[in-house]
Image (cartoon, rainbow, N blue to C red; front, side, top):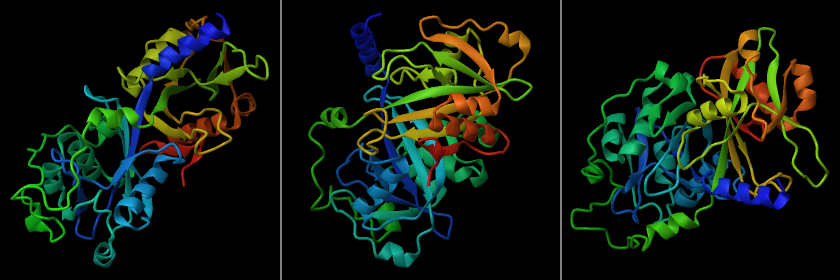
Length: 381
């Protein structure tokens, strides 16, 4: 395959692999309630949690969450752990990787000092989990309700369209969907929520003229799904990619089995399952989600190896025996060889960030709870 042909193929694949990213913040208070905000520009679903869309200059979704709160509410939040990552597919828009973070509880004095951007936030209220479940639009309601119901030690939660998957199914079951009531009655609960009984309050901006144009202009990321397999001796299964023509010449590139998520048609678990089948010839169900690694693009990190930010899911493939290993059938168009590597050898073969990511995933195997949150292979901070 020529370099030009390969470039055409990669460009075609990329068109189906792109997705949006967003980050929101859960602000609890001392009474078990959570803060919601009013979106004055959204007449259909005006109740949300604070946050917004990722920008390429953001080095991570965590930075997106902080920036959005600074812009919307006028203060810098102190974020806690990642509460959940929810991958959602939609018929009328690209898929979204939606991150929710816990924040330190706000005091009444801090809330009273808000200086909201009135074009972005037209009011706020504190709601019980039950009230939030009714007021938020259904998909967001499922996402927030899962975070509020699950033990904190179970986080970060792995969700698909707001529903629990992976280890989250052990602590949460799918419950009934709360009846969606939207903002009805919120002005009676909060002095900071204007009444809309007579229509939109004066000063509200008009709704966006073209939602499709807005979505089309939002930046995209790409995602990968990889799987960590080890043998009974603790050796890690690595595969070597077929070398491409690179500026420095053809060089060996070792990695974990897996590849790009076809974001417009599959979820990360399905991608991990498909990639293992295509690359190794195995039919395996992904285990626990061990790590989430955000790889910034060059707009946020000039030293990055890609213009496009990437989100890498690392799933647990468990311990594999000789019978399964002997059945490996490599995809010849993609892979050259496979190898079982002791940790020291894997560290020598993998790029530093890839080894750091792999080591974090292996460490996550030995503790309960959700995946490690990483940026560039290292713990997010």
